[in-house]
Image 1 (tube, rainbow, N blue to C red):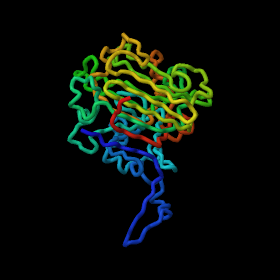
Image 2 (cartoon, helix red, strand yellow; image 1 turned 90 degrees about the vertical axis):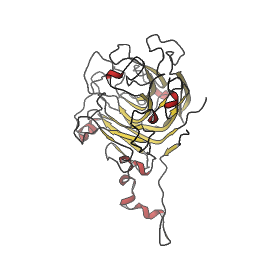
Image 3 (cartoon, one colour; image 1 turned 60 degrees about the vertical axis):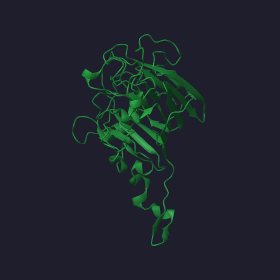
Image 4 (tube, rainbow, N blue to C red; image 1 turned 180 degrees about the vertical axis):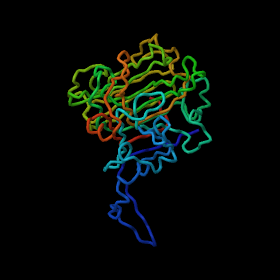
Length: 365
């Protein structure tokens, strides 16, 4: 099976309308009906294989709302998911709002759906996800490995936290490789915990002029296992637990940069590029317990993510949780009111703008 390449770029939308042989010039598209603010992101971006989670609960089911592939054709939200005046796709999420059942972090984030609009294939079906070559049933998946490319800028991260020294404070996740979480009675070692072999993040301390880009690998262990931690690798600037000012080595708010996640066979290759920084390459075998420095991590599951069901996510996954648990590294206890206007004014939110998002087959490196 071949994968249909989805090139999602934020090129300026142009159109030519014909009626009775008469051509409407582009200037005629400046009416209110065709302004970028009036158009959903799917009118510019190909979102035919993504669904969206937003930090809202309009159907009152106590979890954040999801807009599936079909709904996303026409969906936009003026605060949390929209096109800017350059036809780029904007994601925003306050510190305090509706969340998914298994998270205390809000998000405005896309989830890749290989099935597209074919609802005869379930979300958890192997035909809707990809796997590593080492998976014992790799031939049953839609793809073995996959590739995600993005160009973006982070416009804002939360500026307040009760526990500022906790690593997730002042940060946002902008890209993920996620493992499927299954019902508790179906979870076994190395399968079904819903962990993340990759989270790409941006973090900027309030007193710094620039922020840092890094990525984390989560050990594939049970939810209540104290060894289930995220191991961080810096790209530009400082690491996530280092308050050192990154200075010129960092990335400023509003500064564009790109990442590529290429999972070929069992190895995840990461490439980070920016006009103002050297290109950075990392790689890690996801089918064993050797880290990105090729050192044995005896605390991790020996087969890593070899038997997991995997998929991509991208957008703004706000890491400034309002949850207050002092002993856990995961919860910075960031303030938030749940009122968007107030949280916006107080800086208690995150905002990310994408100008490119591409999913395609993995390639050897």
